[in-house]
Length: 226
Image (cartoon, rainbow, N blue to C red; front, side, top):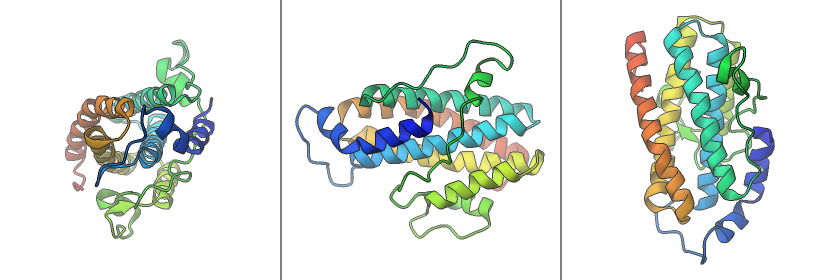
């Protein structure tokens, strides 16, 4: 199933999932992310990270950026597959057998859904670096909106390859990973569904690893930290 169809299916079934995947209906603890909101934010943020990485892998001439972009696509596809399998959605097809382009060749062939446009994350995603990327002010809650996610993706898609493109991608991906850390971390601590808590907790080590790698790339490029 294509990622866009999967997203639609998951969001449409969110209300039922919170009940059917929990033995008893639970009251969401104060300050916790409700399951429906977690699925929306995790899926929208994941699509944003995946699609910007697809664009970077296709365009960059920087070996470090290309290597990272490949790893990011794999990370997001695998995480989406875990969430889909747990929530009962049709599994995302696995990567194609190695051939021209290897694993990333199969993954990048998938159609790109505009990340965030189907998701109304509460406040969006954190501004900081992304606000600088877009040249606009950060939202009041320090989170970018769905429209801003789409703008970032469109901006990257329109940019020619080169050092400025690479720096813009790294900045956007770093901010997206920081947001993902907050989303998955919050649900791992106090989410209402035990299975999704385990998935969220399992996503954290790789998110942290990618943040460290992006920090190093950003420093090497001389980009301003967010």
